[in-house]
Image 1 (cartoon, rainbow, N blue to C red):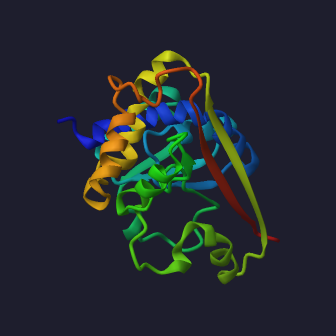
Image 2: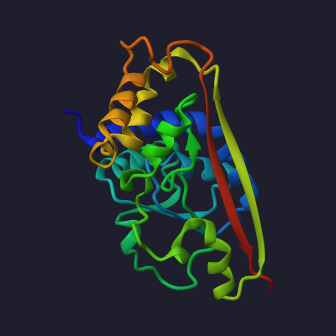
Amino acid sequence: MENMEDIYVEALKVSNKISERAIREAIKDLGLFAGAKVLDVPCGIGNHISWMLDENDKVNITGIDIGKKQLAYAKNLVAEKDPDANCKFQENDINKLELEDNYFDFIWCCDGLWPGKLLSGYPHLESALNNTKTANRPFRENGNPDLHILRTPSWFKKVGLNKITVKSYAADIYNVNPDMFAVMPLLFQMFWSQAKPEVSEEIWQKYTDIINPKSENYLLKDDCYTGLMTYTTYIATVEK
């Protein structure tokens, strides 16, 4: 069986290609400035760091991820792109970070907290899968609701940051090239491969049927498939 980290690396290659336009737009709106200290967590395979460097190659970036293979890929990607880039990488768990207060100017958390619609035509099935612990990691059942990502503005206000902007970006999945369609099932595996114990047998059978390329119900069998990935930025500006 293929290692989940290998699956995750390959899936990120796919999802990053799909979302590149939206992510680059979001990065552009950040207003990265020379010397800015940026935390990217989880940094995945490093594409977002690479795109930040395209926006401003004078930033200082710290990339953190729990996956050894993701980090190895990210390090190689950045080193090949810009050997002089001021980037460092750490292996750590997003739930167990111990970081210096008032150090970073920007915190980037993207593709670690999943928002999107991938199983077009099967909203109830996708809803059931998304209601599992696997799909909602790193959030825990009965966790503190104030720690949910959509409550980010309240985090800012607690530390005295009141000039807040919120903006969402969409990455549409439609009419993508055949090679990308061929590996899109890796995305499904990344999000829901471990959800089986938490859903009914009926749900799991339907899910495995529509993601099976040999099935007549295969979700990606024609060019009418569409999907959606969304991203939201929360920016708090320090007034001087």
